[in-house]
Length: 431
Ligand code: FES
Ligand SMILES: [Fe+2]
Image 1 (tube, rainbow, N blue to C red):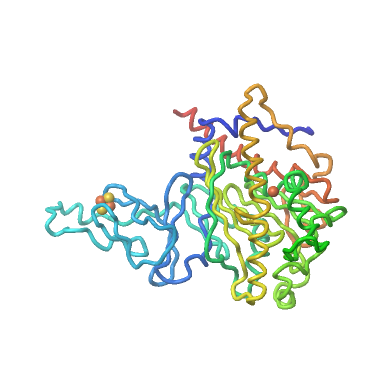
Image 2: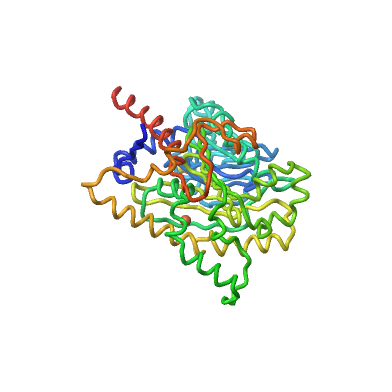
């Protein structure tokens, strides 16, 4: 009781990393993109489920698909672009052709090929992933059949996706362009950081000082943005959900600086006052294991792709309601650039400390982390009054002053990590 132990080997050990790829990233639901990234027939994006390349596409009838990006002939990836539109993908090696539904649409020189009739009768299509699901335009894939339904997997964390999707009458979209970068540290540092209020004042003091200078008029840069100083005394908290998802939230003393504020009357009409207030509050949502939506100044989507125990690729996007008024859209982009972008005032600070943690993990004689104990005396199982506002039943709830900067919020993710990794133990025992 009162303890939560995380061993540093989970951040630095190659064997553990390999097991994570097999038993987490290639075994549970993984976020693969937004339906609005492939709005029209034949649009596609390519991405990864664990180590495996996939194509998400919309066929001629508008149906969504997720196939492995590997040619059945000799294995080449059939699509090399990150995104685009194509009625057909032509394999660059021997020219086999696949349509936007993943069906084989041509085998080069088939008639002259002296194929056995068995070959002609078999399928030469791209292979589908085991499971593909769509929750309100948020797309997920699983390489294993034996996962719960996507709805069950997301559980009540779905409400926090609703709080994003409902910001626009027709949902949300990504702004053109994406940030793509790597950092030299473990993927779980990003997983944690999204839920980590404790680091804000110590990792990002320069951002806060800049905001202060702007308020005093000492800066030529007049962007009006949230004042994190107002957090002192603000009520906030967090919820964890089964399957590793979690969200931190707190009130927003300056809702008027949000792009959404400009259309809030319409939002209230659509979703009611309670949910509209939650939309204007600060919410950082982490869906285990690979996607996060951070809404504290602008709205950012982050996709985490682990490459090695000490190397992670991040893909980041600015998210906005479809049909947003141009003034609000411009303001959203300026806020996003200011704080979230890889060149913004927050992200480089975070990446630097992730890399410093990874460097610190080289000290093999220290094995246990002490960073999962704040809030332990306060955390409660089940919903609190704030969960009741949204009608959700989280696994745990914490709420109170912002200064608690709760660390029990990480427990849900590590519990799911352990549940999935225990299946590795069974597999190893069978070997
Ligand atoms: S590997 Fe694709 S056609 Fe040969
Ligand atoms: Fe940060």
